[in-house]
Length: 453
Image (cartoon, rainbow, N blue to C red):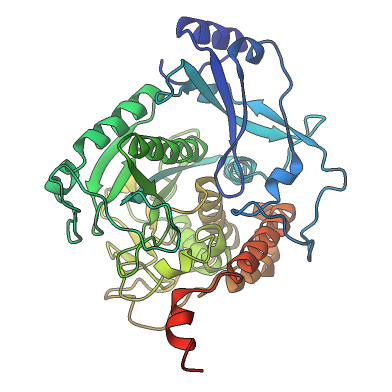
């Protein structure tokens, strides 16, 4: 078993059998960055209490602490939150030289109470709403990312790295096997590191951008899949660094090139029977299927900031760059935000093509599944499916971060599914990030304003 144990005794045996010296107790912050503590494995199994300050969930991606505004407030005492290891996630850290393990932790309050605003808990609460109806959602994320040459000066644009041919790879390599082979040793390491952690890759392809790759994961439980994306991002970065290059999950790392998405395939099954809720017994699409789409059309634009969380994210969502900028759905139509792939009745699913790979996987999944569930709960009918290209009309989504934040706060139904506490906290952090961004003067401003205005 490369991954996961059931009891603390099993954990002690697992660590001993592998000669593990240190263990990393990690949890995703609002950005999906691993935070936590490292400790000797002997301490880990001796009931040591692990704590983090609550302020950890109130700082921006640049490490700033925003001003209190609206519903964004700091905990008056900045009291501790407890790390509660989820032993089913225990695995080795294969890139470390000393024998090291890692475990993903949930966050609880000092007396063991649930903390509603942490990303893993936000997703768990959405999944529980499905369970209350006797259902469980199943998801399959696809993660795109770029390999880029090492860049130690943020003022300079990023460039693709040199592959084994000694030349930098160019664009137009979609599904190219030669494109993958340029980085075959790095990809071998990704597979090797993944196998050691019990992470299962379904397929790997070269995407349209230069040195842009995509990893598809097997479908499964949303929390397990969010954990996998969380660990995959770390794994891919580490494998790239080993080869002297960067892996980036920025939504739009290079001007004029395709952005990086995290498409999410979603279905819902009955817990008792395992039957797909999206299909009727005769194989036709169910009312829940259409209402799920209706819910996504109604609410995904309002939760887009959880799928496009940074200023840079909105550079990906622009016309003519192979990303949807609409709120349409269609059958096997890649220009729509919500695509229904060709499948049999048992595998009927809906692909959300809006999230960027910069999104926190826990929050992107929580938003997407929460929107679909609201559609089912409220019987929301979708529009007619789009037969032609959906990207030629006006943009039907928020065009920037502040607009997206305001939309998240605008609908009380979202607070019921995601928690008002989370929305207030997240909105405050995002506004803080926007203010930090506004302090930076861009090359465009120097180019066109310096001598003209």
